[in-house]
Amino acid sequence: MQEKARIQTMVGEDLLFLTDDQLRRGIEAMFFAYRAFTADPDMILGEMDYGRAHHRALHFINREPGLTVTALLAVLGVTKQSLNRVLRTLIEDGLVESRIGRRDRRERQLHLTQQGTALERRLSEAQRARMRAAYRKAGPQAVSGFRQVLEAMMDPETRAQYQAMKELPEDR
Image (cartoon, rainbow, N blue to C red):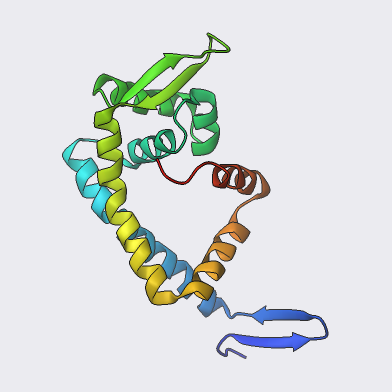
C-alpha cells in the first residue's frame, strides 16, 4: 500500500518507512539541488574553460594549505592522470603553487596563490550564500538532520575522510 512517510515507534526504536516514490522524489530533489548549488560556480568556471574538478581542487587546497598531491587524490577520488591535468592547468595559470615537501622532498605540497585564493572565494561565495539561506529557512533541526542524512550516505572510508576534514580550522 503506497502512503506518505509513516513513522512507527516501537519499543526503543524509531523506524522510518518510505515508499519507492518518496525515495525517487528525494533523489530528484538532490539532483535539482546539486544543479542549483553548482550553477553559479559553473558559469565562472565556464568563462575560464575550467570544470568542476578545478573547483574541487581549489576548494580542498584552500581548506588545507600544504595538502599533498597524494592526499588530494584520496580526497577527490580521481585518477592520478585526471588530477595531473587539472593541477597542471591551475599551476600554469598561476592559481596553485606546487612546493617540495619539507619532511619528504619527494612530496609535492599544494598552496593557492593570491589569485587562486581570490578565485576560490569567488566560486564559493554564491554556494555559501545559498547554503546559508537554505539553512536559515529550514532551521537548526533540519540542518542537523540534513548533515546526518549526508553522512549516512557516505561509505565508511569517505566518512572518515570527511570527519578528518571537520577537524581542520574553519576559516581560511
